[in-house]
Length: 636
Image (cartoon, rainbow, N blue to C red):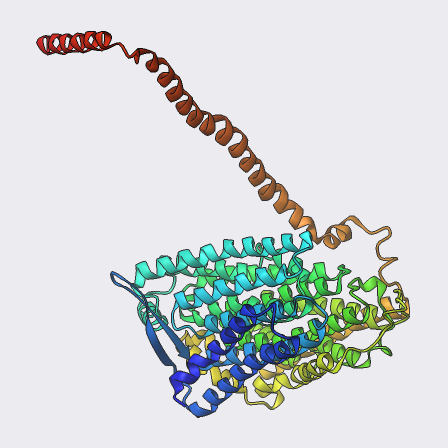
């Protein structure tokens, strides 16, 4: 099979699944959908493996052009794909984790009346995400970028009979459009500057510019605005917690493993532009750190199991952007990969708990689920340990690499990132203890007793738990006897960036061991504190809510950022729209238009009186008209 065909089929398989399931979603039997939906994703994964092993040791970029998509003046945009280590890594994350989540969805959504429609949307999402990561130019990336935004809207509002869910979908769609406008303006400026939107053309010309160039500053900031919207960073992060309105597999696939990492991928793909813009890198670092701490602090006081994981996702995305800001592009992609494993595991584990409790998401009404859900308990514990950064699980190695690279850039940045890591351990184990520890605090219906999830749901949990455990081997640092496979694999993509930011860490191994020990000790202390508070003392959440200090109430209410946006942006916009409608539209424009029509009618009513039907009167008027014309000609 030709490489061009293999490359083309990787995104086309999910598109085919969408077309088949979308066209026959009312008639196709569920058993067929249960095979077609995950099957097309598995086919893409197998094709990606064939592509990977066919390339062998060839890690250089290979472009595949299929046809010219847009041709206008000097603008030439082909529909083409770029296959290099970075795109291959993202293809494996999207198809691998995507396939696991599709299998899980077969069990989770089996009784939903929109079963076929759900898998059609999920297949469309995977197609859009593959288009985003495989495109060889910014417009193709942007089409995939918009496609995942559309699918996010469709899947967040999947249960559209609930108006609250529809509002959450609209909120996500609108906030993403704000970021997308920045991306679009960035592309316009890219074309104006480099006269091309192809990656190779842009990056080769950008290398001739001086670091700190004002045009590059504007381009990178505009592109970063797009990343802020898609990857839920401050200030465009508030859509992600509300997006938990969608089915849990949607949260796992779109809002944990793939879509929200699109901004990280875009910045990593544009690494040359960002290396040449140190001001933008500083701005990214500040935004990332603020996002890490804000989202982590909010997660400490949340009650909804999925919203805790949503704020955790926002915080972990902040770590990825922090790594990008110090030039640790491989470290960011490493954490992106491990995060896809353990966060998908945690979301699917939460879905298993929700499934067992008949839809309950409030952790105050859980507890004592260890015996009833042994597989979910063990796999959820694996994900919790991984995200907390405890060896030898994957999250320890990826987060440790980010902290080390950050310390090499600035000890102050490291300190704030370290505090974020401690908060992560605390709120994650708080959730774990309240869900699985002590006694059950909820209620069970006779028709819905506590039970473990079916094999179609527990098997994906086991696979993701294994990946969360062993994923650190992908980029095991030399400090722990590894050879940093992922960093070497991605080196052809990032080696052309500044050597100063891609070289060895400017700190000794002794310092690395010391910092690792400090971080691990702090994490273990937070876990112990959470255990003392929520297991030994058994305070749970009910006593937490009484007599809280003011600052605790503010944090628990998510700093009232949504209320602030509502006051500053939503209400003024609604007032302005009502003013434009009620005053400008109805009282001014409509009255002007209606007045012109009424004037025409009244004029016609007056003029019709001279239509008497008397021929003599008509001759008189004609003669009078001739006399007036002659008179005016004489005067002129």
